[in-house]
Image (cartoon, rainbow, N blue to C red):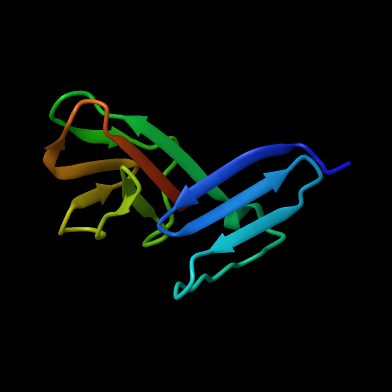
Length: 113
């Protein structure tokens, strides 16, 4: 009997499934690339924060401070250009250049600093 799925992460043509037995399945769309780094150090463990925006919300506070340039930000599944084009990050605060609409989903992946 297969292990029960405990988490599914989907973003920009990549789907990662993690089971209770710590089995990891990665599905990448044709033509896409994927880099995976494994480490014994807890420093390398990715953190995930998800937010549902209120009307015109621009500021989102992450649970931890991300390591410099480790963050990947997705707005309704679409990758957002880092620092400047779509948003800026200072400490653990992400500020978007324009307000999100009510109900938009913001997913942030990063390595804890």
